[in-house]
Length: 226
Image 1 (cartoon, rainbow, N blue to C red):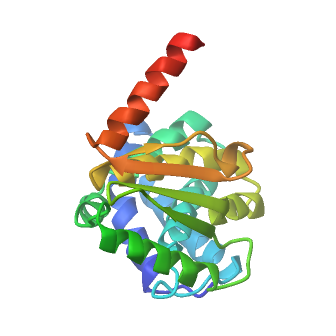
Image 2 (image 1 turned 30 degrees about the vertical axis):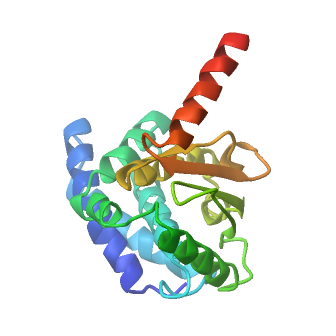
């Protein structure tokens, strides 16, 4: 991939809260040196990763670049970071105002948003024939308050395999739950590619909608029966 404004944006969006959190958690680490090394590794990782299309053609480039930020910091830490620390670091970086604000501005539960999601999926699927791209199937809901998205291929899984860090990919899936929540919804998911599923099944509905209440009731009933 070329190192574009998208990669620059993701570095500057995610790393301030990320390194603040790390500094609190690991006060004995040389944070300035870690940041320099991570940024170098981030650029190198981007350059060795196959192209998946520009941001204008594939909005999921943001997700791939975000994954590179997290993995580059982990690699720069050179075995000083365990999985638990990595997972917390990812969560801390998502608290960046620029990240949360960008999602809160989006209106997920409208007819227009569903149409746009389908268009973006079609564009993204055709952006590049690469395992580092996502293969996305969008299933419109019964109304604007629900939508199902199936990911049959995940670029973060390919990135994890490339970097020999596939075990860390499930910890990045928190992005999905948080982003839907920030857009006023709830994500119900039963499997992910990162944990061995045949797809990532996203059922998203507006928080408090009849579909949300219906799904909660189904889960409660299933819990009683099991």
